[in-house]
Image (cartoon, rainbow, N blue to C red; front, side, top):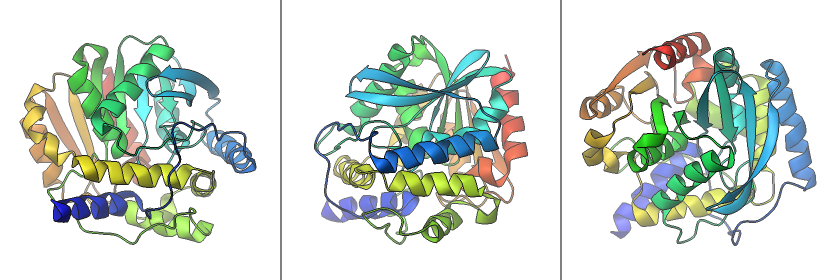
Length: 323
């Protein structure tokens, strides 16, 4: 069991980059710090880059009990976008921009990320937490039913919620492989410093593991990601989540026996260079679902919408608009 736990820790660290550090205790309001104010500025620059005049709304959640930032933009049927581990909602600004003409987008910062309150995941029932966060966010926004778009950890949370509350999910778009899609042991990656990235060059190096070509990532995205890593509590929250996932053996691969119960139409938009593993992983998972298929995007990595934005958004829009 200890060996398995180490493999899961190393794999989750590899997916998103992290080190194991001190923890924050409970939900902690951290969005008034100078670092958070700097992140607000960088967040605004990303939104301006993509022409997204998003409203930043703070909602009080009941479970977990914390205040969460949600970026809101667009018109039409509601879509909830859940970002990946170690990053923030505004990293999906390009996706929001591509959907906004036809869909109302809601993109929360997950607990311990961005301007949402800090959070200590130690001994938290992880799957229950993920389901509760999505449900509480929808309730706070008065959304009864939505389509879900998730990247990496956000993809895993989308699957958790769709299995727990199928009546509240219209469709699912998985951008890149959901977290820990491959069977253990996953390959370890270099750890991320506990205090966050030391410089923007460190952030760029992390993105080089997540993309087929990190030069495609707008500098505004890199600057916002770097600023988010410096918010007090961001890295401790992430590190406690990594440990919690390892304790509970939390992986997408472990969900495979349940995928036959997933009712919502689902699409995997998977880069052929995704660090999660080969495209066969997406094909195998889609084959286990009653109403799923996958699109393999050439020359794209884990952050598929940054590597190949045009193909990614065309496929996403077509899927969400289809009957």
